[in-house]
Length: 346
Image 1 (cartoon, helix red, strand yellow):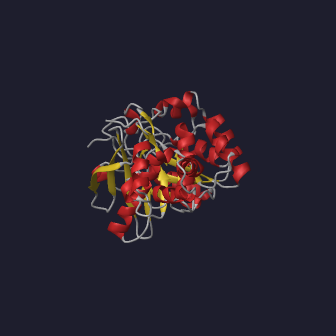
Image 2 (cartoon, rainbow, N blue to C red):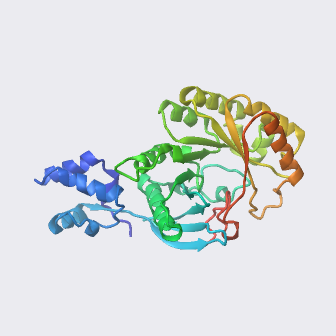
Image 3 (cartoon, rainbow, N blue to C red):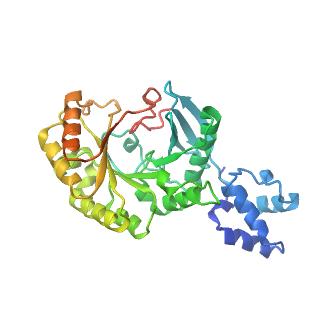
């Protein structure tokens, strides 16, 4: 049963301070509660041991903490961990811990399901149920940080918004969550270690620039030919390549930080010279780097990983034009935790 009480994590520090002043207590109690919520990640008022018992009971009478629960975890043979995250209303999202020799990365979700309709992505086949709240996003990061310390003996080093959902379709809550993740009163993570990945929402990319965000921006492009992009990402008929490019130029003008293009090469779709040439022209319009991503099957015969020869043709063309390119190997494929595979199969 969902509680009708207000989630205390929806309140600002000032509002929590005001609550304590309103009951005749000291305002600094609000600071203590805020620290328990966002720095220590308390899930229950009983955990707040420096708050008196009667005040904890009072908090329980007025508020609730709608924390997530890691309902189940799956471990890949490569060390990747996928969490099935149960929300307070019973809905499920997935988040992933991705370890390498030098870092551990949290891949987190921003929506239950997805607002968009990319045909190659399993998440896009799920109906969008709702946006995640800032605390639900924050909790995913906190849970993976604990897992990183437990299984890899080091704290979480990076966060990527590449899980379920389109982050820019949940703009306010995602930005609020990132503020908590980077705040000294939260996890204190550097914004430079956070990457927001979008399928390309021009209006909101411009808003990111206007809001002077400090984190990194990645764009799932996959084709620089409008007709092809509409075939694989139907929403692109309304959010077209021309408007997207204009927003990315605006982003760079405002932030002076280059874009990362995420790009999958499929057999018979974008594995020819015309697509390579179009992509090169697009890349030259604004400073960027490229991540070529391995395609992860979602049991759809329309999409097949391109040949090694086709991938090398892209790499050679990009390198010849001095555009930084990396081939990103997928992790966690055996547990459906790789890019594009998050679909709540459990």
